[in-house]
Each structure stands twice: as C-alpha cells, then as structure tokens.
Image (cartoon, rainbow, N blue to C red; front, side):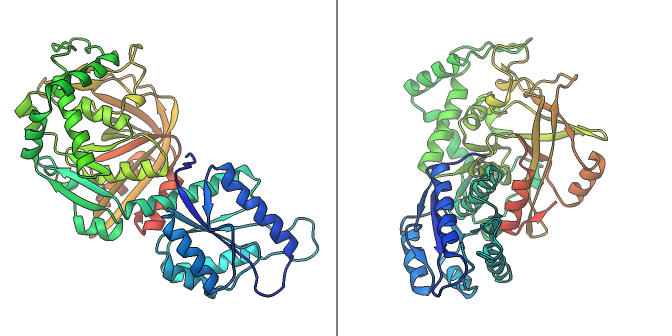
Length: 456
C-alpha cells in the first residue's frame, strides 16, 4: 500500500474548552501528528485550527467538505466530549479514522487519556452504525504510520465506491448465472452505480474506430516485443493485431465517454464469433494500465478490481479455481492477465500471443505468472440478498504443469484447501477469484467491516 498525495484528508484536532490534563504534552503530540501527514505527502485540511465544541466542529467540517476531502481523521491529544461524536456523524457520512496517541512516557500522572477518548468515540460510532477505523500509537513509529495510511486508504476507498460507476457490456456469459449482477443491492451495500450498455452497439463501435488510430495503436503493441506462442498458426503482425487494437481503443473510449470507473464485458460467444478474434490481449493491456476491466460479464469482479485499485493494492489476475489438493490451488484462465504479472517478455517463460485453447482463434496471452512471492486470493460476491467477501494468503510457486493461457500455482496458508473450498462454495462464491501480489487479507477484512459485508 502506498501514499497518494492527490488524496485530500480532512483532520479534526481536538482541544479542551476548560483546563485539564497535560496541555504541553498535547501541543507536542499535535505537532508530531500533523508532521506525519507531511511525511505521507498529504495536505491535512482543517488541521490549522483546533475544535472543541459544535460551532468549531461545524466550521471545520464545512471547510473540509468544501475542499472535497476523501477521508476524515480525528485526533484527540486530550480526551474530548463524547457527545461531539454524534455532531460529527450528522455532518460527515463517510468512514472516520480515529487516531489515538500515547501518554507522555515516564510521567507519574495521566497526561492525555487519548486512547480512552478514541475508545469513547469508537463505541458511540459503532452503536450508531457509523463505520470507522482506529489507529493507536506514536506518530514517529513507522508501523503506526503504516496503520494510519491503511486506515486512510480504507476510508477513501469506501468514499470512492459511493461515487463510482461500473459498466457492463451485454450481460454475463451464457450459463455463468453465478456472475449475474444486482444493481440495487450493489448500490445499497457498496454504493456503486451500475450502467448497462448494449453489446450490439459496442460491436458497431469496434468497427467504427478510425484506421489511422488503429495503426498508431498497433505500432504500440508491436513495440512490446510480443512473439507468437510456440506452435501458433497466427503470426504476430500489424494485420493480425488490428482487431485487438480496435477492442482496446473502443473500450478505452467507452469508459471515458460514459465516465466509467470499471467495466465488465461479455466477451463470448459473440465477440469471437463476429470478429474471429478474442479481446483478451486488449483486456491484458488495459488492466496493466490500471483500468478495472473484467471479462465474461463479471460485474462484481470489476468492482473487486476497483476496490483494490483504490486501496493501492495494485494489479490482479482474474482467474478460475481450476483444481486443488490439500495445500495448493492451481489457478488458470485463458490468457488475459496483466502483462506486469507475467514473466518478462522475451524471457524463457515470458508472455507470448497465441490462439484460444477452445476454438483456436487469436489472441490470448500465454505464459505462467511470476512465482516465488506472497500473494492474496480474494473474491467479492452477492448471495442471499447480501454481499460477501473473502481473502486469504499464500505463496506462488513454480508449477510443473504447463498449459496455454495464464496460470499460477499457490501454496495456501492456514486452513486446508478442501475445507476452505467447501466453506466458500456453500457460501455461494462464484467460480472466478482474483489473485494479487503481496499480503492484503487483513486490509480486505477491514474493508468488509467498513462496508458491513459478510466476511469469509
């Protein structure tokens, strides 16, 4: 997870209306705490004035809202009146980050009760049903700074989802009923707006991309250095890449014009039947650029990608759970993983371009994903009129099995895989999951708590 200096952070720093506690320590804490935002590259809106009652809180929050801040952090260098938590909730609808600071070290007296104050606010927020994250520790502690950054990322993610728009071209692929989207549940539980788009109109859009733009984009693809997969009957050439470029440009244009933050596309059977080409190379390129695009009409997977992008977790691989044993899972999908997750182009296991395994039409990205690194497996889905999410961690390892498309073998930590699979299937989890480099299960758990999703 990384800092994003583009995020605007609202900060309320509490003072006391009447004397009490160690006010010299409060000043030290305030100075140190605000310095962390500079370290993280964030501009704390509202931190230049202290708040201590309803009028000062209203004034500060008005400034924070006018600045269109993405998150709100509350710091109590000395314990504040718990009643004020209710006042804040009336004006700020998003998640709140409570940052409790430590007592003065080596002092014989209680200096601040900051953690008690944050605990007081937290219990009030919880009983009022208002989402929050709580961070505790010294501002100079690097681990505390990481906790604060994660809490802010979680809060801004929820805020971003409440204003996000996901499109779906067509619907879910035939038979994949487990991927069906519920626009009202999506809006109610996550905040995302669903925008349905016509598949036939998209096909017209693909055909309408000007030849000049296609040629310019084909040159970019050729510049990647991708070669034909071993045994492929389809040469990688300017002519053979034109359809892939049309897919790429038409999706990019559509997302920009419709102001979509994420997109799911019904990629088969219509597209390869109409154009004799698959859109998977285009999807691979788009996801490598950080766009949240999913295939087979999997809308919740597109939202999952958007969540991960907002959280700063990075690129993910949308895949089938192909097979497993007691401790490992073999993940596979027919060739649309982000290129950044594949081995370097030109290396022994580097990404190449070949035909789809089922129907032999171009182009899919062939090649296993990078291994020997920690990964997180996760999935968002709807079932029983509610949303669910899971995330668990493991280590990606080299696979002795070579298949076309993209694949990854993961040695899973914790619960035995058959037991985990049984639990998730009975919770209604769809057949798609996403794999991300790094350890992010705890972050997803906290996001589930903020959004009030069922955690598995």
